[in-house]
Image (cartoon, rainbow, N blue to C red; front, side, top):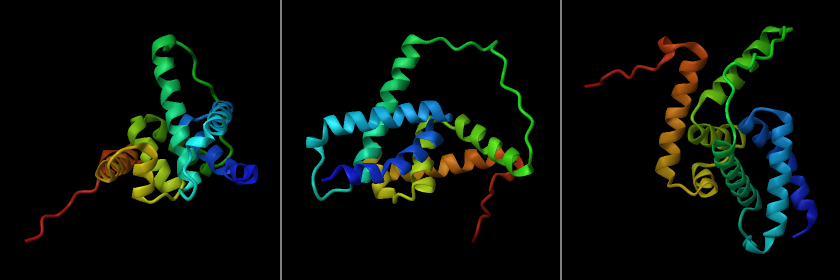
Length: 165
């Protein structure tokens, strides 16, 4: 294993971290912490297995540990003013809406959705990365997609299944 293989995966880690945590600075911190932990525990990686999936598993664990620490040590200020900006184009509005909708998803659904849709992992890879059964991946993905659809387009966008006899 060469450091070059680690380095080659950094852009994918950054993209996933950015989508997972929402802002560039926090994402970069998450990637750095992930790489530090992975490098220190590299002896735990099994040669011949998917390094990308292993690094995403490390990132998942680092992020989960951070989330637990934040719940214990920080307070959320609901009175803080929200940042205001003037979007330049319609596409920016849609991107902002998507980022907000992703942030509103439960973490479990957001993780699965990002691994499968953004990182193009198979259900099996996502299950291994998150340490959950494949059926759980499929149900979280389904619920996450539906919730995202409702958040983006309203309740009328919910897909209604027709009964077939």
